[in-house]
Image (tube, rainbow over all chains, first blue to last red; front, top):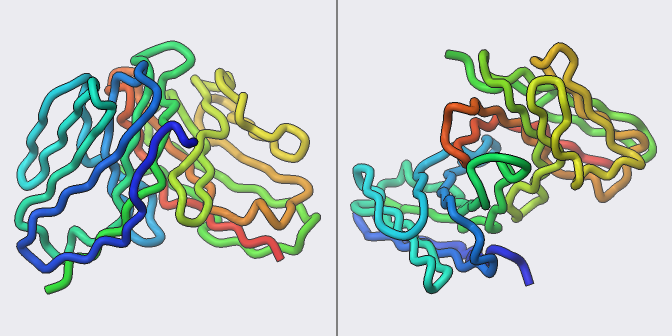
Length: 115
Length: 115
């Protein structure tokens, strides 16, 4: 079993829909949680970054972390065709030491928003 | 500000041939990473550098892979000899210690095909 599980989709939604993307994880020591967006043939780019449990909102994007359930989510409101990409969840253990920058990624969810 | 630059973007080689990838991180970023991304999967860390020191190379297959970061700036990842299973995207990323634990800036990747 992988440390981080993510439904690969693909997910296809109409423009304007609310999108929900999710990941579950098994290591309760993870403390920092990220969502990266990866366009086709490009590198991942950081979208959202949260520490521990709770919600974080940035424009049309909301990230939720529930450490008790080992479950994180990304919501996209009013989805646009330009949101079509692969969304990767990622997490890491600590802010420093040997775990710094050692991200454990999910396999990514392919999202298509059609006009 | 220029992002992380990688070259070549694409490389096709015969198995058993050597190949090298080059990365120039964002100016001022002292931490550099090489990640491997197989098709349909999330990236996996190969090696992390703090300046010119490799502080985490536990996931680097040292029998055929090598990396260096001379002068603590540019880095090169080499595979010799390449095997069919090495076909993947090799991502370079960089970060600054002043940033959050998961805030990595990725290049566009070097896509390797081994025939």
